[in-house]
Image 1 (tube, one colour):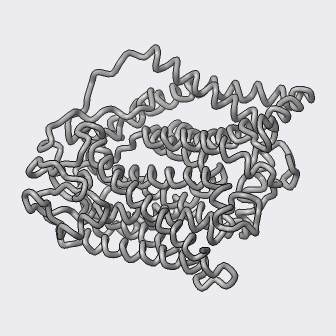
Image 2 (cartoon, helix red, strand yellow; image 1 turned 30 degrees about the vertical axis):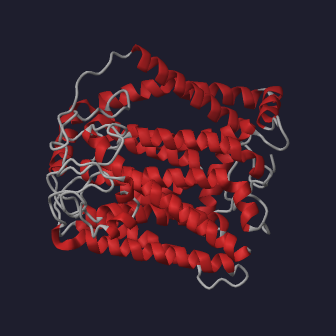
Image 3 (cartoon, helix red, strand yellow; image 1 turned 180 degrees about the vertical axis):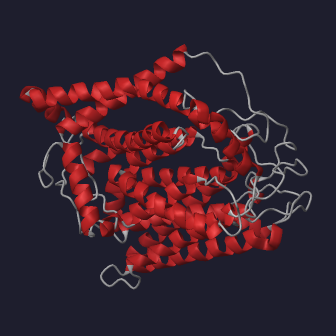
Length: 521
């Protein structure tokens, strides 16, 4: 029965990942082009406009059954669709692996729990990471072509992180918060400060959107909307609606055609580069699935070391490089947009600082009360420890998500505003800040801190590799941020074994918790 149950869960997570990847193919194509993701509700062929039936829309299987061609017009289907599906399936298996098999990202404190018990306790945080991986994958694919970040992805990830952390707090709050522990829970001061900052930021956002006039201006189809990341509202501008034929991409990106799952495109895959990438992703998917199954069935003597998880990470690095090499019109457009905004960059940064002021003041006021009033701090501690049912602490879970959101977003805003004021040009996109905040909300603030540092090295390495092939001053940062966060999430426990990393986390934890690490609270 153990073998059957283990194989069942592995196949279940793989199938869920493939299904999510199928839907990601739709949003990756439609959102940047202003096409609704719910109308039409079915996938269609952009060449013959025919509806794709459900049996021709099964992840990977339909592509293989149809031989990579549309049933109606025999047009070629880009291999990007199964590649995205298999990549999302791989990431879903990685999330299952690091939580339930290798234990690299341990959730519940129990160390001798069976697979079923582990899933029963940790399903909320595993689901939150699967949602985060899906959002990171979709945002990376869009940013590679359009330099465009749709913050609806980050908003969905933040909502999932908040809700699922609140649910998950029942099974994991009892863990003692040590330097090497995976989940850093806030103390009473840090928890209430994070909640106050989050509430003030939310109220500020609501006031601005209620008072701001509606935006009627639309970007023509094909235009680059990335410049909207620096708008006061933080919302990306809408891409102008276009007909299906106008919305078709004029050229492949790294061999990838952006289109709904199962649809076709008249342009064939140039040089079969995407076909090679799809085969690499398929091989990676099989390696991860087989190795996860073997290790799950032989937990006492693992045949595959934890470093096998470097395989999907290496493939992601190769895919980002391959998609970054081709030259695009958006490369020139994003540079021109940044240059055009350089004269107002400092003004925009000061306006953003003013918008953040209420949240900063709210956090400072709560911190002052916590440090100056022992009864208030005791009340905060009691609020975080409130247990309406059993060991469930919903406010503690909410504070954990809020602290990750505040520190992740705060780090991004500090870099953006500080370097923009210093150099007089936009230093960091607001979309990237939303991504950091969402990752912190789901995976914890240490992942954002370490991942942000790692991103610099990954982006530099990627730029050096692509430099001989593509001369551009623009670098899509979302893929590198996403890859860095994936690396830290997977190898978090191993990274903490390094002295400098451990000391840095120790310092951060002391600052944000208000208590010495090693204390239970």
